[in-house]
Length: 142
Image 1 (cartoon, one colour):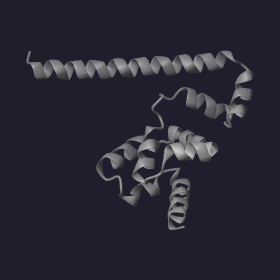
Image 2 (spheres, helix red, strand yellow):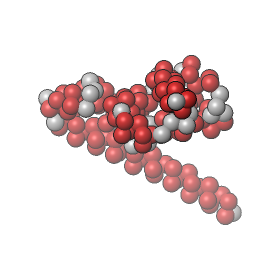
Image 3 (cartoon, rainbow, N blue to C red):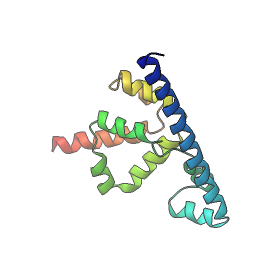
């Protein structure tokens, strides 16, 4: 076997192992939440989610909102400033991104043509991000 195929196989097995660990961790998070019983509804309310959204979020990987980080960078929006200035908006953006069904399309667009406005047609955060971008433009003009 060649070194290239050894590294390919190691990459494949490494990716599979990461996938399995993430799946198990998500399952443990959901199980832990389920053990909370009725308290899960209170937890959801405390963080501004429905109980169903809380369970859906618990089942997601920790990197489920990474596309948002990249989109913010592409739009020249400072995530840290948003976190300090309006953490509720950032949390809503992250929740929406985490639950989005267009992950692969978004990843592909961010990798290939991040400045192409096509993302605005499918991104559930498009209106909020456009409003934040407009706010930044207005601040810059002052």
